[in-house]
Length: 193
Image 1: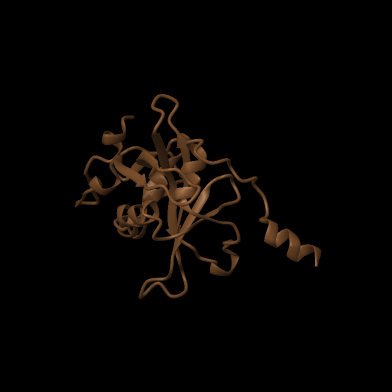
Image 2: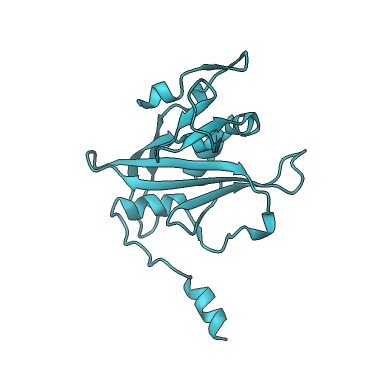
């Protein structure tokens, strides 16, 4: 299914919902040279999967309240996730501007977290994404937003391996060498002490 069809506006339970905020968009990403680091210029293409607005459904169904995610799983509309998804373009823009940090997640992807908003109790909003280089266009990086939801167990959140988004882009573009994955040298030294 084409991306723009996935995020076409829908009428669900008699109410109209716009999904324009989840349509693919491009962001120019330019960083000037700084010290030994060369200038960096790329286009970040932001692509959203249905995980950002729906929960996995145990029933495979069709209709405006159901989607198939990129893995072929049936997803059912969840209004609470939809309402939070309205923030996603703003959060992604802050990530690309290096205004908020990201962290390595356990499935070889990355996480961004937004502190709890009023009324959320202690639940931070988590975004999980993958970033990869386009095989067709050398300066194009794809930011694939896999999932976004309120964390029900904030104490279980891992934020040990902070990674600057600009550095991640520079590594993918081959401008700087990639750092080895795994614990940082500081955490290895602390564990040996």
